[in-house]
Length: 293
Image (cartoon, rainbow, N blue to C red; front, side, top):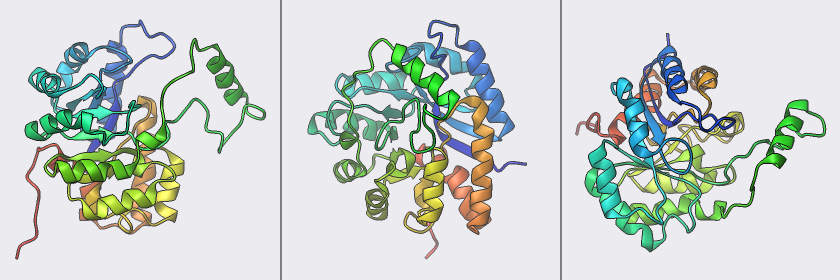
């Protein structure tokens, strides 16, 4: 039996090989897989540059509204106060940012943050380098047929040029945002991103409204254990579970963290905080629990 889980990093399913296909079967499969892992709530990152638009995503999520917490993928270059309010009125309860043209703490983005703060809409922000088709630290097309297949497919992609930089998506940018918008809840993805763990831990240590999710795969999971990030450098109250993977991989991802948390000797309360409670508090589903004086 799995613990109750609130997954704060689920991408709306998208068929990259056949982008025009009806996404309904993929949505159905996603929620079947979530149920199998006892994921009772999930922040579904929806809309944006790929897949169905914001309105269509909400329509497809409607049958699963007891589980789905809609989070709108937005571009801060074109998203201001009015657009955030419109998304909220549509039914979105959070925002997601990635691949920004300027650093997250650019003052021109502040009107968007101000609106999100006023509406109680947490923001999930990608941190660090954006992953690609092949993890060259783990494999290489020279020796791995599957990596070679992906490499050839990548070469066929119409335009691989993109204006993206990890320097614009750094944990220290969250410090700027948190200081200017102290009621705005921020979830930095992937423990801050490979190479950014010290910065993430530093911001999480001193900013009450900054949290980090544990998504990112086995490399980040290994770093989280070896570098004593979970419950050590970053308190358990500052972490959320995030899958950020294909629907059929979610169970494996959950299973790995079940073992990690047990191996670390986390108490039942500490595990429940990471699995569910922290996210429930961030998204306003339950009030924050404070110690009695």
